[in-house]
Image 1 (cartoon, protein in one colour):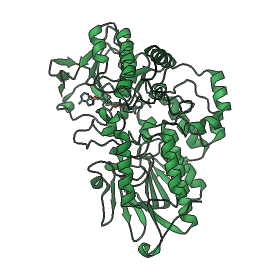
Image 2 (cartoon, protein in one colour):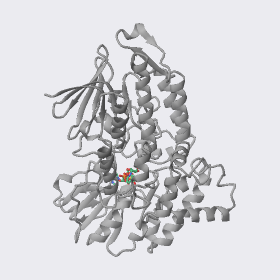
Image 3 (cartoon, rainbow, N blue to C red):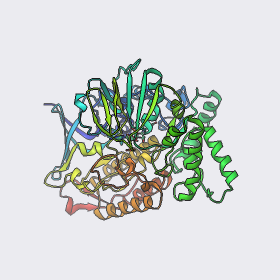
Image 4 (spheres, rainbow, N blue to C red):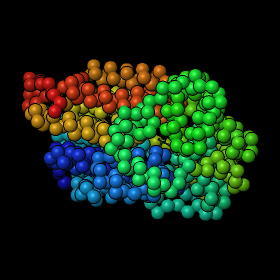
Length: 548
Ligand code: N01
């Protein structure tokens, strides 16, 4: 049984874990990454379904930590595909010599903290035991795929796949009758491509989602040149914006203060430009006032009605049960147009729900659909799923999954009280999924790196949030969310897609800029809200940690 001794164990070899390794190794901490997959890439390793691509422009959705990397890497399209992003991540792993400290095919099953020894012991599925002073969970927000508990799935005689565990060799649907279950971001990307291959495609829609056109295109070389020439300023700007994307500052104008003509012109311009962030930041009341929000929602419904020829299908596709943007806004290429094809049928799985999977296909309350293949685009146990799957506990103390039974409790989405030296990258309670993920990943890793460095410099060895600071932060996260329209939607942001999951709004929606400032202030104020202790008899030697 292999035993590994480290300063820092990082769980997860995606964008977060790799950057953590890069930063911590440069600070001289012995660090290793443990990754369940057979390759690096995390989300971009697993989600290989047709049409998978980023919905944030690649010039933004990329690491900023290396000037050479960001200026030299060429993105072929405005929005990179999954294979290109995976290639980029592999390039980063090679370029910064990260692979020698990445253990692939290693799924961490448990992480147990021993207070007396001040060490975490991680156990992998293959029996490897890792002892580390610090543990960084870079396990991702959307890394626990979820296939609904449909009766009869095992009896299905065709092939089925979940988008988040898609076969690396791809799936050929040529000439097949295919069912796609779900109409979230993933389904909206895969449907147009599967429709081109399948003899017939049935889309099982329970809830219609708002989707905006991507207007993807080959990278405009001049635009790329200008963006890169201005990279330093743009990256700085991104860090101060609500969603972590440059060019989209905090909006100041109210939609209700604009005239209907002015609003329409604005929405048309944004629709023609493509992308989601323009809509999300077009007016300061877009995500807080139902009336303001409805002006944009109705504009998008009109575009759907204009695009889809069959008025009944258009009406089914036009979302009416949640404010636009309160669920993840989807981005598509030819999604609504796909419903004009003769070989595509939209099945209303709201009025006639799926009852079971049969050997021949899908049985709804209405009828049976005979299928050769099913693609589950049914989402993930988001934000907490991956952490709850690992048995994280303190010897003789708390178990994280039990502590979070009523919803995740964290301070800043970085740590949870009672679990010393355990960090999360983009954990619940941080902007995470409500931001450009790489901006948030870099911010969390930089914060953790600075914290570990400060601890080491000052002879300290243990940090954990106080229960009071955590309670106050969780209250703040809820209060900010409650002042918006976000909680109105049955989204995975509130865990609504997992039966029995407590309904708690998980990401922090106060904005990337405001959040970063708070994290920096907290560190600068001697890690306010954290308890830090020296090695040895912690209770007697409690000290204040000051930021370097
Ligand atoms: O998952 P989802 P996703 N019967 O949870 C339906 C990110 N992402 O994989 O809404 C019938 O959004 C469910 O219906 P309902 C992005 O953050 C990013 O699409 O629960 N239907 C819904 O339609 C995104 O938000 C990119 O009524 C059932 C769908 O399945 C997140 O991943 C690309 C059902 C699940 O939608 C997750 O998106 C793709 C049932 N029993 C995804 N159970 C980028 O571009 C579930 N559904 C970066």
